[in-house]
Length: 435
Ligand code: F0G
Image (cartoon, rainbow, N blue to C red; front, top):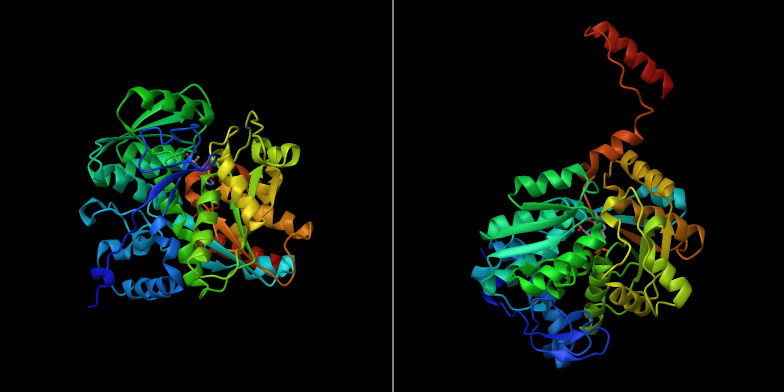
């Protein structure tokens, strides 16, 4: 069998401040700019004069790797390693993350009068959310650097993912969770994968603030998305999506926004593809927030994205219950560069969008459904047009938050019936008559 990883040309990289542009070779444990303390992003000076030849060769290499059985080739992250920081093979921690389905939502497209609506289902990752792509990247770097303990603050999914990948890497993990605000599926995962779970009497923003203080004094590896290596894993969604679309760029990619790293990562992926000549135009990357956790929406409306306006967050979509998003500057930059929209949706709109997706056989968690609710709103507003194609990023699996669904389906009383064939037949007759 042909294994394309005989050409492992992963990239050397630098870290660039997203605010003042300072470039540094490495970062300390806080991953902050040494000049202005803002967030950093990974940059690849090697590509500057790589040219279109390089881009075209990449397409071939990536396609060939689909026939390989090597773990790094089977990964939907590491298969694209030419566009990732260099990590030696023995340090790569992978569970074939990525490789997620792209589902055609025919009915949604018909209902909205849009040419095509697709769902990129990141909930089909190993621990049930998009976090796995970023966590695979960051934990591999942590392993290469010799860390034995990784930490994160989380609304739930990051904790599940970090716990699993740390277990695979033979590392310890500690996760800080806002007490009583994490969906039970996620909490159960973190426990089962062996994380040390610390529940704090605060919200996610409070957990993240405390974790930053802790990491300043304690030598653990920070796994939150302020770590720019997380975003390098998450950006591979753009590469995989373009392969699935046969390199035809969609008009819109719609992403739910919480701490605002994922939307930034996906946008970065598309920008890099454009830089390498692999795509000739960008999709509009739009960000959808819950109305009760709408810091970016307010910032865009009230300060044109110049300053963040934090809010006390409230939403039953607990994954995006975040009021002081760390990556807001990166998100603003992606909105500007891709001409995307930033919108908010109500709790009712999220619930309805989630139920509609469910009735089309596509499950997801509440935060993910915000993207579909957002598409409906953007179509109503005329931002998404009839002849266009929109891709929804469904960020998390349906089974993450079962309580939310059971509450939503409460009106459908599950009355017991006698354990007899005749009773079931009577029920079937009623169902048939009703359809
Ligand atoms: N959707 C889901 C299912 C999430 O878990 C998150 C974030 C988001 C969307 C928003 O992504 O923060 O990059 O804008 N979850 C984090 C966590 C905060 O801790 O699991 P974002």
